[in-house]
Image (cartoon, rainbow, N blue to C red; front, side):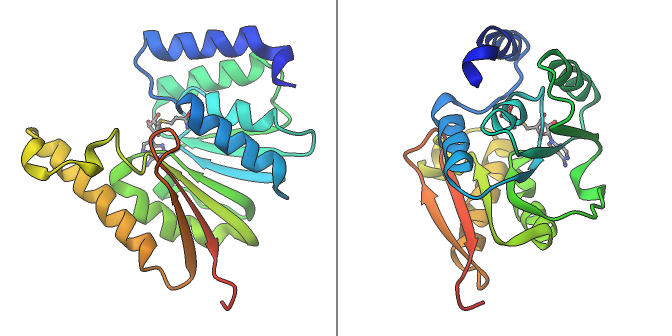
Length: 202
Ligand code: SAM
């Protein structure tokens, strides 16, 4: 299905590059779309739309799938609306312009994809795991935070960056010690991906 939309997708990737919009790396998006294709996933909630690249790629994995995606930046949200329209995917993708931490949702989802402010991953996980279907999966991107997670703190000059890296490390600990969810850390894929599922005896 992606082949039919190739040129338009390349335009979106080029726009992201030219305007410094962070979108998923090639390896990461391949893993995500492949996971959705191979598993029984028909509804996805995405935290962090940016300009709609990953939402569009997920929507193109199968006929019977819907994506709800939340973005708090107005310019990016508007660009995402334009892109979804350009690909004619309005029936499959619902875009919400809001801070995810202020959103209230009535639905539940087969998959939740967390790709927004990296300092708030734990809050997103705690809030949205209540919206995950019984056998659902929560996927989080940037678990290596551009490689900084493996660096010694003394090597990171910026205080702000050190704070962010610490938050990502804390999130890794939060997942590792989670009593309800079991997490697989795929550190070799893209910028590192975490795949969390409910433990069987829960
Ligand atoms: N998933 C997108 C893709 O691969 O095409 C990339 C998302 S980008 C890495 C992260 C986005 O999350 C940014 O556009 C940012 O504005 C948005 N964001 C950050 N914090 C947010 C929040 N609390 N609520 C909603 N969006 C947020």
